Image (cartoon, rainbow, N blue to C red; front, side, top):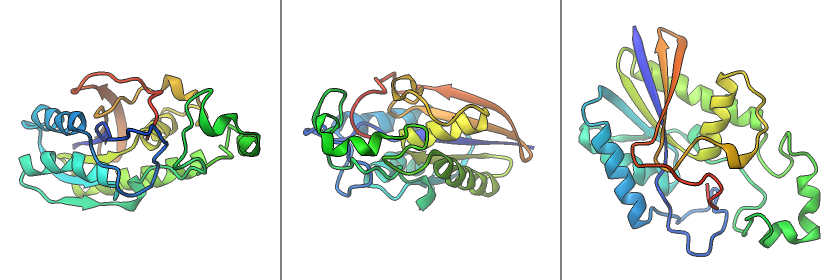
Length: 208
């Protein structure tokens, strides 16, 4: 029995100050982000989606809404799909800019393999895997959609591919409104398929 769990990164967020918004409330989709969500809804319209679940953050809920509506479903919420915790939340953290140039923050960068500035990668992977397993069970023999965030999705993918969880953020394959689809035969993961129905974006863009 084949079950597919699609991991969807939310659409573009209105973030005029270019901060790392992380888990902060009040960050909603931009107009472009809303269009991206609609594009994904159109791309998935003919799919056999029977379960839609999202991170509790506003941008994820807004991204999930048109897809759930297209399949006459309610958006469920799973806290385990939330963005990773980060001590730089609310600050500008682009390379060579903002908080990273301030010596008082350098101690937070002491261990990039954990990482020392936020939620450990292994904890992210485990909670995301648990959320996926729940979604797989809810949609057995059909398809489920989980709306989450770039770092949690990419961390889970590396975990499932048995790769080191630490990585170069500039090399993440997880564009805005992209799909990382996990194909299961029964409980066994058979394939990971990546697609960008709304187009590619730069993984270095500040946000989450």
